[in-house]
Length: 423
Length: 30
Image: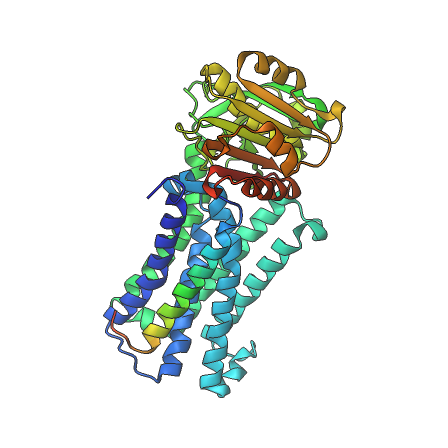
């Protein structure tokens, strides 16, 4: 398995295991299908829907191994799998109702048996969860408030779905089937507790002090940290971490930021950012913060003959980490940076980039216009297929750049794109 | 990884889930 294929193979394997495992255990549990095929289809659809719901809790849990394979992949898959989960729940409901239309009265919440009430409650929680996710910005929900609501609604939907299964008391509640249900509960609860308690406690052991806060051009802020009594954590350029104040270990107020400093100095990591945390940071010099990271699966290939970075605005943050690290490692390979900004005055790190261009084999292409295939083609070398590409910026910029690069014949596995969101 | 690769991964997951559910309902031995 090549490095580019590893994340999707691992994720798909996990999914197949989560989907098939409980079904196999239900079968081993001595259940051989007492009812008609239609009735059993309704039940098996319910079981796989619960498995997918469990995976929705596992995916964003920042599990070490899986996170290193691709944290952004996990979050995107979490979003995309929503449709699959919902359609399986809908199929479960439809088949169960078609088999016995008298069950329709179970949908009347008051007076229905508790197993049905738990199922309806789970659906309501899921509905609220999806509504707040899709309409968060229009509803004016604060990012951290939304995260807390999202996790609570997700955990509630999951817990009520498990209560529903226990109430129905079949298949996953017979013999080995219990192990299937136990496995799903352990995975779901373990993910929530692991992320919110175990992980936060471990992170709180290594504190950092805010040493300096620097205002950059273009409205960005760089927060320079220094490890407080420990050796720091090594990271790779292109990775990110969750930052929070040290006195809020178990609170939801944490923000994801990309490292902007050199990976050669993990004792003094720096993050360049915009948004709410950046606004507060100026008054926090000397305060202790916690870093949950590094996360993100991008690793520059040692075999690539050169690297092109495409940055839009604040998307320069991880690119600075690449270039500063290359400088510290005396990397002799060619780098090309396409840097898109609204105006010349908004170009953060302009002088430092000029300086880096004298020590690195770096070409900086400043753009205040749209980036297109012609501009990329003009500045990229002929052996472009052996280069590596890192794209970071707004959705429009990343999608446009990836499309243009693909049009120039760059293989998809050589392009790493990250959409930057201000939170 | 290209940005839209998770799209077909989610479709694959749904198909696997559907096929597994149908096989189970048909009492096909695993």
